[in-house]
Amino acid sequence: MTRQRLEAFSDSIIAIIMTIMVFKLNVPKGDDLNALIQIWPALFTYLLSFLFLGIYWNNHHHLFHAVDKVNGKILWANLHLLFWLSLIPFVTDWTEENRFESMATSVYGVVLLLSAIAYWILVNTILTHQGTNSKLREAIGKDYKGKISIGLYILAIPLALVNCWIAMGIYVIVALMWLVPDRRIEKYLL
Image (cartoon, rainbow, N blue to C red):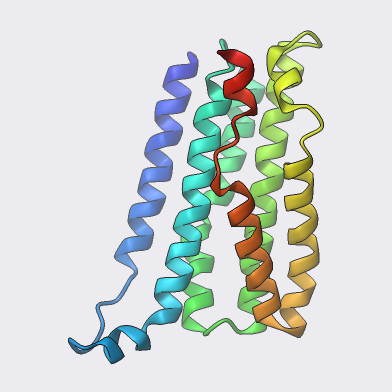
């Protein structure tokens, strides 16, 4: 299978996930600002989840520009990532429906954590396939941002059971860390 085919498949799955999320948004009951304020939990969780999906899409795109060939392990690692990303609409809706209650906010973090771990597995599967002299390996380096993200998720998940707003704040911090596209790969390949 070619890199382009895998990338196109992944792009379409992520687009479907984003579409599912927007369909779950309910129209405000009323035509004033107060009606919009009433649905702020839905808008906030939608925005945060959309941002996370956009970050994964962007970094996935950059990552696969460093890949010439894919093998079965890469295909399965990619499907593993897509599986966890496909759960984002579910946890987004659950978190919003329960107005950021502890368990829903914690499970939201679990899905974000497992998505991050799945991305890490995908990157390392590609690095293993490419061998020790890989340009991608040089570009990824020690991947401090990835490791910090996983650590922050691990911290936020139990904190959500104590104070859901601290956990949501940590999720926002992780999103902001990745908001600027990861240019390490781009820099090494150009």
